[in-house]
Length: 370
Ligand code: NAD
Ligand code: TYD
Image 1: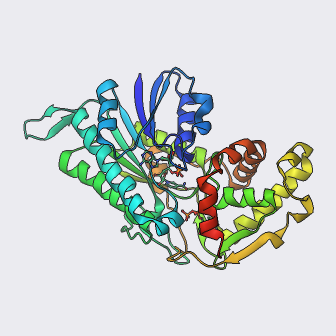
Image 2: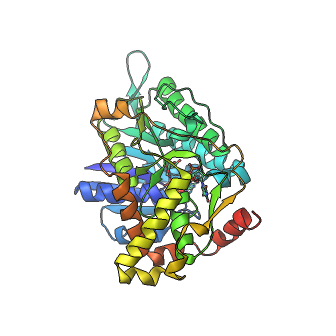
Image 3: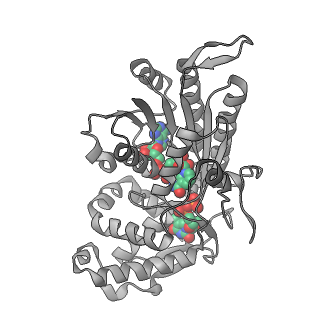
């Protein structure tokens, strides 16, 4: 029976991954380590907490004692590191926290895993690891920097991060690769494009827009809305990570993306029309609406001051993961966005729970004076 240590498992992608593998593998053990920052919520995994296959530990990935204790108590086969400070705008406000969690936290996990996974040395003095163990770092396409109007990121594109967030993720990638080279650690890195789907914290574009539409609030679009992101439904990302754990060649990086480039303004317009259509089609969704349905229109869009150093375009070339592991994205954007909006319409309690307290202060600070 395989045993997973999943850091950041109470966040957006981590929780979706936990649900995905619990469903897929009946014989499995999962230990979630999460510090429950503003972005991590026990409510997100409440339905899974009673599952005998799963344990939850509240701890910081930078806490050496906490991570070591986990390895002392449990055999871990796979460590999947989702835990991170993940929001570019917050990284512009407070870069240091991003370096602490994303870089030092990753190194702490690597170092602890290295110690517990080392089985001995080979005849050349190189470390030998326990059979089948693997460290998977969940990274991002943002480490490659910004594209112009054309071209794609491949795994060979030089890293050129431009925000404190992406710089911290790039540094983490380098330290993971350094552990592979220096100590022969069995690692993989996945670099995925923008995800969307259920349990996405409403500070990121798509869930923020859905929330504001339902409240009749303005929809803040940075700059002129022409920046392009390459959107992937979160379940397709989870599937890719599962495939890389099972079949990824050790030491390799895999790009994950669904060839679904869209301008921000088009995402916002599509979200407005889809929310309105779904509510018109199903009267049960009206309870999610805190404004008059007539207010759901493009007049809600407001162009605000651009993000400093705003990357123009991201676009992933996923040829390697498709050719080597057979991964393809299954959810078309047209279907994924409907699934996502339906989920938010049906899970307003979750939105309310995760957006109380600190989030309100943050929101005021970010958008209050634009
Ligand atoms: P998220 O912000 O929704 O969740 C992050 C989780 O990590 C939360 O549960 C939080 O409580 C936890 N966490 C944060 N700091 C911690 C710490 N110091 N110790 C322990 N736990 C901590 O993020 P997400 O969108 O789910 O992203 C998960 C990973 O995927 C991140 O590494 C991110 O860089 C990467 N990624 C995200 C996207 C995307 O579109 N969201 C795309 C590509 C890659
Ligand atoms: P975001 O969801 O923050 O992801 P990332 O910055 O990691 O790509 O933003 C996606 C795009 O949407 C990005 O180009 C910035 C833009 N954006 C807005 O225009 N308005 C907003 O309120 C937010 C949060 C993002």
